[in-house]
Image (tube, rainbow over all chains, first blue to last red; front, side):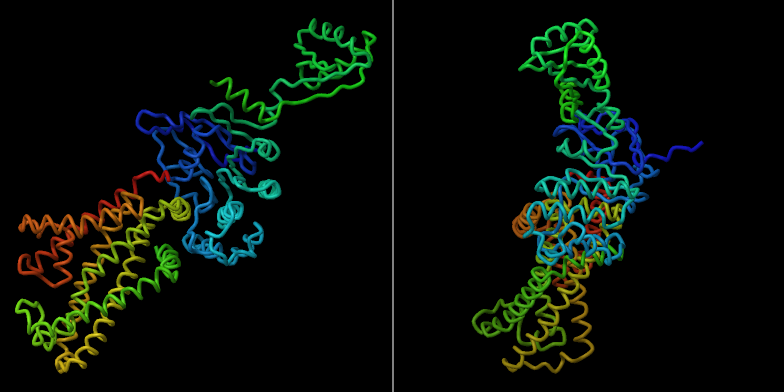
Length: 305
Length: 261
């Protein structure tokens, strides 16, 4: 029997108040090591405040937490193994990209040998000597990611890393993050691009108005959502008969533009086909669809309001 | 702390700050030393001039130029210290620094020492420029420099250097305090200068007894090596007391305050 690995991040009852305003409200979640964890929530949900608490930048009002097995109250014990980019890339505009990384490397007692490798990895080597203020938003973002990787971290915490990137840049970051997770690094990433998160996240933490809505595996969340099966019949009028049969079995349906939508789990498609066959209906098309993370997210946010 | 110190120097040594500041200090120090000698010629027309030819010819005359520009070096240090710390908030870089060096007091001390070393360099450059300028003017105005090579002259120069350095660091520490509290270079510099140069000036001229309690006035007295209204030792001890209080307040504030920008 193997014992499960300690989580990379775990919080219990984590709360942050500013006066009477509760920004983060009793969060409870644990992020398994070696996963990409998407941190999702609308603006003002408390994502950045939570990230700041994890990084020791702000203190919690209540609750406890651990990062890489060390308590949140002593960030100096774990931050050497953490790379982070919070609320966008922040660097000295009058220094070059390379010089900015050297400042951070010197500060953290890290080797300067890695700097050019990282700049090459984020496709900035050619502009490494240019001042940061001359960089485009995408370049600044990529420098932020290079800075986060500087300490060869066990845990990477990124706040909106794809802001300002073009589709190719987003794809590159997605590939990079997935690759990092596959090499054993835990990636905790907040983003508004839910389609991107859906593709790379093994695990999700969803917040709304400071409260936890969901924490668990991405598949677990999406599979629990009600999917739909779309059916087309050789003779369109048969769909009315099929709809009535399905309704009798307790599944909701809708009919539009010659297509029958059956709101049932995807694995019920075979049963639907069998029912149609039994009723002498020939189906010309049968497909299943699962709700996207975006759909699920909006359903949850809507439900929470 | 050494790492913080070295990282800070990577920023300080950028040409716009390092070369720009030293060039400005060179120009201003030369100007302030020159003013002493230029005004000497006017002594025939004005009896109340603070510096006379006889004073300059003494061993302590070598340090007069440095002492004359001492308060201005303090203003320079105030602006640099305030801007260096406050810009970390406006640029958002403080959060990067704290992720790489979460021991806040170590970070603060490293930053402070790097700025102290830069301030010491500024005062040193000012001293060298003042001495060179004094020799050039003395030569051109036929002022005797016989005593300037004496041990007493060097001792006087060293004491003036020390006084100006203490005052400069004092102004710089006020700059750090304001930079940390206000988190904006423009606000901290404008409010600080308004207080040090205007408010304190008005208060001390209206209430003469207050001069010994105003930090900017006290530091100016230390830089000048004393004053008829407040003795040097009183000014020094009160200033150091204020500075220690300021450092304690800075440390406590920086250690506890959330970094939410």
